[in-house]
Image 1 (cartoon, helix red, strand yellow):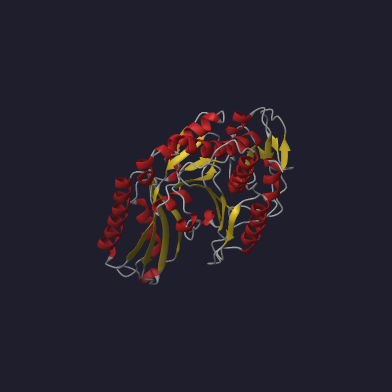
Image 2 (cartoon, rainbow, N blue to C red; image 1 turned 90 degrees about the horizontal axis):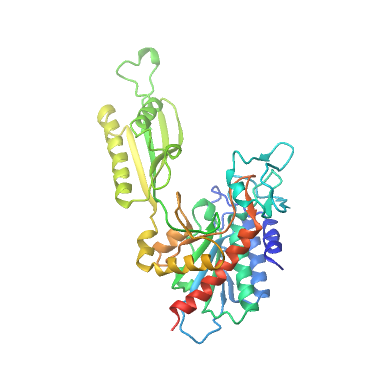
Length: 408
């Protein structure tokens, strides 16, 4: 089975995760796919293949050298996003893409004007959707690349490598992928998630992240007799939003710029609730953003009365750079591996989070490498076959370079 056939077989499985079930994995269909992968890994000759009760799948490719080499891992997630359907995915291949708009269905067009990244892949073979579902390259491309790389290494015993661990987890798309990942059982010195996007990208910086939920407690009084009595919760909620810097929102920022993002607002005169996410790459700025949110809530309470605004704020994850920068050889190996696969390495900061960030803070340094897909979480998602193949060779090269550079 070649890598394209492997990827297409994976996207036939609907593995959409869900924020509503409070289970792990969050959907039974992820477990069905995990069972399939378990059987496939056994058939492909991997050892210590284990699928635990929470849907986490682990396996080993034993070392083929007597050198002492660090144990390294490769990780990808099995679920697809709740944002778009992953059921009955019907991909097709556009050979030698010519740079024009792509008609996915009678009414859905992936246009070059809206998606100019298409022009970076003229002449390549693109796997696209039929316009009714996402594709699932996030992250079934990563899974296919890892599995195919393990097959390739077994077919090429002249490539010397240490012990390699493979890990596939559920529920990354709902922020829970690393929560039950058994780092101790995985037993690696370092690892890579194959969950990035464009070819050549390496990511070892991500946002520091917090959530903030604010409840406004109002007082409902007949509007005709409300003078000095009514506390209009929903109006105060909008006032609170206006106190945040208007230019520091997702739609106004890029690169390393952080933001406050209002994700939900609902309410009435009696009660209103707001949900925010707070993001910044810089830890000091991140802490100052949280302090600013506290100050704004304090301002509201000072104006309308103590307890009118109640804040619940929680840290979600931190910038993995803190954990990776002491072991920058991990990044150097990845850069060399990408260059040897025929690409220019591109260091990029993630404007979001990743399983690798949480795993890094659990003691497993884990930067993120491209998987090749683009326009995730919707019908315009596509995957250049050449990117899929280059990502697979990047995995192979990392295994070989780790032995060459770190073996003893």
